[in-house]
Length: 435
Image 1 (tube, rainbow, N blue to C red):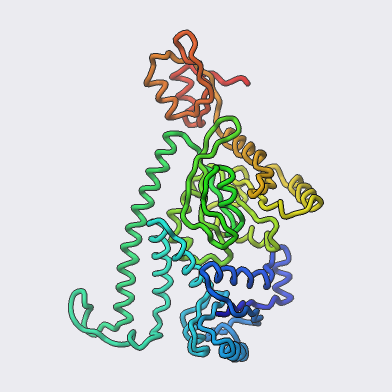
Image 2 (cartoon, rainbow, N blue to C red):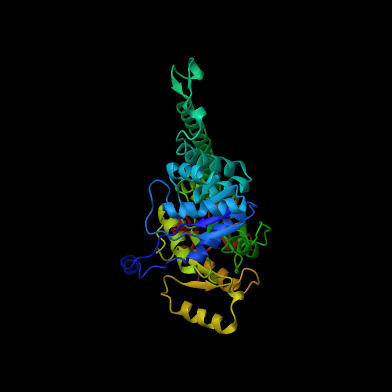
């Protein structure tokens, strides 16, 4: 197979308009597309950047470039061409006819990866839904069987119904069933979240560009063994583990699917049930591969997906930036990064870490604990040891930091949300904790 990067040339006016934005390097974009292909074990015979002045409605590329690639395909006996762009159904069909080979665009390639990697029932449902929505838009009478008519009644279709109409109807029915199953998944997740709220565990969610090191950081923070590999979309299915904080507190850490530039809208919609963990999180850790040449552009891509989910990446207190893979820098470069980080506004701090070596992890954990504690109140109280119901209520609705039995009473220090502060004060005569 070959991978083709049909990237628009940047004109002077475009360059001025995007002067303050991170512009992706064409070589880095092509390498990422090749990485996506390698992620599903495709053998790449060649890669090619095809600069274009404008997008052609019929074939995306210009006529001359199409003919040039026809010769390249014939010379390498190519069976598959990956176009690193979003092709319309007509463009895909015309290119397949011109090159006499299978053509896959960026959306189709990412869907193939997700289809292979989804392990849980929920992940498989979400991928299938995204794939069917994509497939429905591709029914453009590319094959003769789609033009045949069929007769009959009931489930066989109405009189004169064409095969393409039957296929659309079958896909539509399957999509409706999948959406109903995913509603059940969302309901189950809501129950799980309600259970965590009763135990009052706070949730910290990891987000970031694919291959930024989220799973490695997840393993480092929780001592888990989630698959982590130098590969795009190494993990898809969400994972939750307990996170131990420096002063004995607990939180739940959630690892989510990695984002990528031009993430197909079908996937964002289908994976919304999974990404609800991010929506509900108390703190979001935006993990960045700070050693990547396109780190700034990747940051913008993640921010764009967060906005699609209704999360403001500039919200401040809720989001902590984690600059990962600092072990790849020499001491001088590392000192420069620290200087850059120190000049960031207090409401948008960043933390330099190496998930591989553990450098900077303690400072990150302390910051997480401080952020979680900022929205909670610490109280001291004394409760009779025989008040089992009261003690049980405190354990369910507050974080018990200290508990000492003294003369038949428990002296307790608890941390509670502002929403439950008044209840604890009035019911247990609690007073603010003095450090």
